[in-house]
Image (tube, helix red, strand yellow):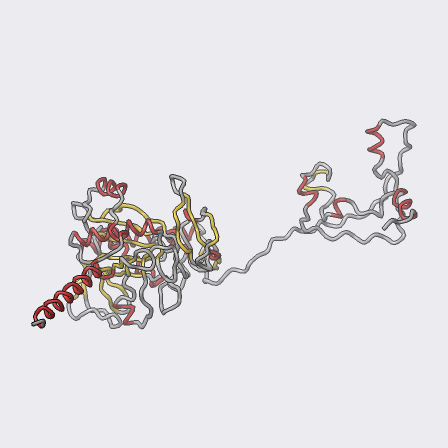
Length: 456
């Protein structure tokens, strides 16, 4: 009698359980559903782009910036805005292995499946490192993200508010039909000034290959098609036979003539500008970061203690004077510690030259003039003037003020009494004063003081 109702109850319970699981899978935090801010929507309108139009992102490590580009109604990508990066780690150069703290450099593809609404770092998306070529080259590591929380171990870390906006813009582009977002990551902006500055860096051949892709994008305003061969990127290439193999030889390929001509013209103009800068004495340098950096706009932030981390927590004042929490900033002690090493024409570090102040030439001693007879009466000011040594040998055994503080009796052609205070007080590298002769006579006051009893 009771079997049928029991079976109905079991089926009903299972149905409810499955429904609950489905609801759990579909549940996302509110931050992943945040709308695109109205100010950014207004920018879309100014740029003649739709809210769900395709997106392209460009990152620049040295400048610590990520650019947002969207395709306008004419079919070209247009620049919309720049997001300052709150934190990135490592050095300039590509990522090679797991744990090197390097932010990768290259061309990557982000699909909707790589978006993570439940990230431990507020929100995130996986940039897609390692790509096909990097895997073929044996480069290791993974889960390289753009995320919130301002803490980086090989990622581009943003503020939570920035990440909500970037996530929302990408979410709407995917909803509008975009299948994947191209993420371009560069060591720096590919300008002639930067290319001249880093001309001796061992990564320059790789960086010039990245610049080729940057040039393709900038002259066409279209997402470049990316292929790999000979451990290099190839852009907008159409193979004439054979396929593109990441570590194999490049097949014969062609690039649409108008695109090839425009890219060649830009490359030649940039190379000419680099040569001009070098001819004018532009220095070659290498930079060494303590551990990555952040955008300069965050360097005026105040550091306050964090009870939840051994790191420091940072806040930045907003326009309405409230503080936006940046999260647990990774390695705050390393922020802003950048060493520039100047290189010689062969690319070797130049020796560090320590500037020193030359010691004054010794002056031959001359006999002091005979003392003039003192007047019978003197005013107070005259008496003070007469308190200075006026007879030969009267204060000859006492070092002068200039000798005590290591400054010459004159500074810059001025009398010591007329010289600026800092030149009279601060030691500038003058030689030590000569030792006082043992038989030098003492002034009357010092002689009397030595003969009086000492109170301890």
